[in-house]
Amino acid sequence: MKKFGVLGFPVKHSLSPLMHNAAMKEVGFDGSYEHIEVAPDDLNCFMKRVKTGEFSGLSVTVPYKEAVIEYCDKLSDEAKLIGAVNTLYFDGTDLVGTNTDWYGFIKALEEVEPGFAEKRILVVGAGGAARACLYALNKFGVEPYLTNRSMEKLDEMVNDFDFISVESDLLEDLDFDIVVNATSVGLKEDDPMVVSESLVDMVETVFDLIYLDTKLVVYAREKGKKLASAKRMLLLQGGKQFEYFTGVNPPLEVMWKSIN
Ligand code: NDP
Image 1: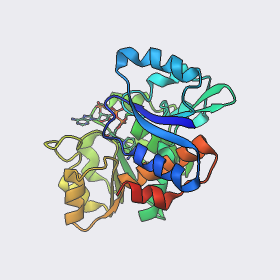
Image 2: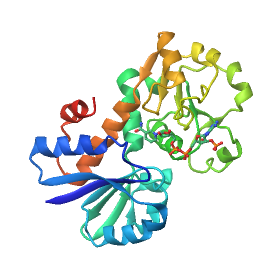
Image 3: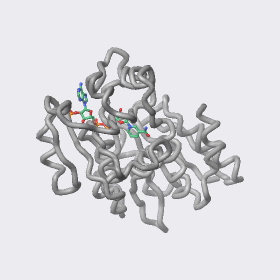
Image 4: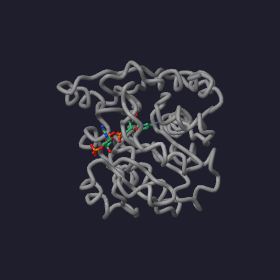
């Protein structure tokens, strides 16, 4: 039986084991997938075990998406540009790091906004999730607007992606169709909305990458906005991982049911 898992710290909340175990069962793949919680001091030791082939593949989540890069024998182009690995698998004896967040993001956006390529899109954030959004949007020919609390982080991104940077106090002078929250604002219950109510009033679609009912999601729903789904993003990036892990097409409906 092949072993897989999701590596993180903490990681017990992750829905990935439900999705991947249901998928493996559905397609008759002989494998198991578990939560793998590793403290930062133990990461080096754990990754040495990974390199011996103890696991056939891993999903990687917070806080290790950057830290695992140094252990990879090969990196996909998307992982290099995004600067974050959320998927580890073997190509022969080589440990390969890749990224499927960008794919989940664009597919989940497309489900509610099939014409997204023609829209004015604002992305908020400058971490790994925002970089995955930028990679995906650029790949589909979109140059989004980008803002972040620390504007200097945007300067570090200009060589990697096409975007128009906007200071937060100028946001309301512009016109957007879609706003994407790619920050961690909203993870804590008392977090404020990451953008103002008047900015949300202006757009037709809101995509909060956090799969909770954040203040942003609740307000957008109240206002009748279209909502792209963080949970669909989780599903669709997980489906892509399943292909890397097993070489089999993902049974997305079964995976979706398992996390709902
Ligand atoms: P990072 O830690 O790399 O980046 C965090 C971002 O949030 C930065 O832009 C940071 O701004 C901003 N931020 C943090 N606190 C505040 C604050 N108080 N006010 C304003 N901005 C703030 O995180 P990731 O990019 O890895 O992840 C971001 C989110 O995306 C996470 O919440 C995660 O849950 C979600 N995500 C969802 C996925 C899905 O499948 N649905 C997949 C991947 C991520 P600054 O630069 O100024 O510090």
